[in-house]
Length: 184
Length: 136
Image 1 (cartoon, chains in turn brown, blue):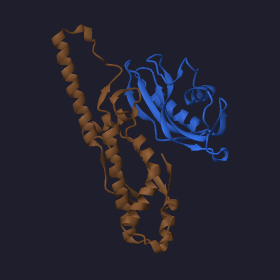
Image 2 (tube, chains in turn yellow, brown):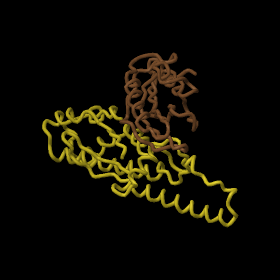
Image 3 (cartoon, one colour):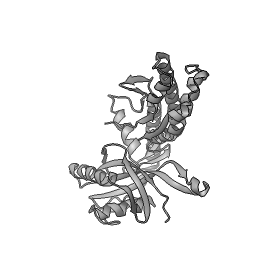
Image 4 (cartoon, one colour):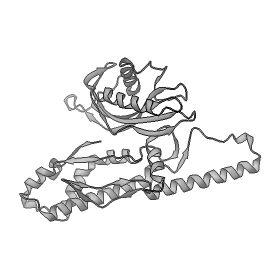
């Protein structure tokens, strides 16, 4: 069980036409810029969005039931579990290098180590809005990706220009061509 | 506001009664089955440039609908989630509770959230609404 969020940037076809032909270094330049942007979003997610402590609304121990030393032990135990959960989840947020998938260039931002059960934990924490996150929030990937989408074309354009993949003589308005409005 | 508008729309399509088994913003642990509309932000608004950019023309609000079934029945809420998804994405340039909705996009298939504190299964679907600002 996992959650998939995709951002589709329209306009690559027009961009390729604008540069007359699909040059391999152009595609690589776009891919590298997309990879760098994915890393940037990953860092933002890790620093600002990943839940570090989750107090589930249900399943709370009746604290009055325990003797004081039990309460202290319980608190320490809970704190260590929360730190471990938060740290594990934070560290598991990854952004892949770009890869070609058919006509698309793809970068995957994910959380939860696959095959360990953590993927399911990461997905539920992402989707369950009723959990009380003391630090961080639900939708910890979806929200920052959606917010970053509007900056993506600008970032790709400036990155490509910086690396000289598109010469100024071609006078291509990359930001207008790349239209990052079709995302979900 | 988005919550009551979507809740009223779902009620008008036979999913139940608002504040009885259709809720918004807060989802009480009982009753089951029930559903709840939960907003969670969205993207930047689009200003109305025709009005000098001082008002909002459209907003892009995200929300999740959580479907809860009775204990031991995971298929019921999952099926309701699928049906509600079809009902919601059919919204296209209509007025809901006096607010114009340009459209509603579904952000993914039904997601199994597990069980709540009463061991009742919950499924959710997330959406993005393109709409005029709510007036109340």
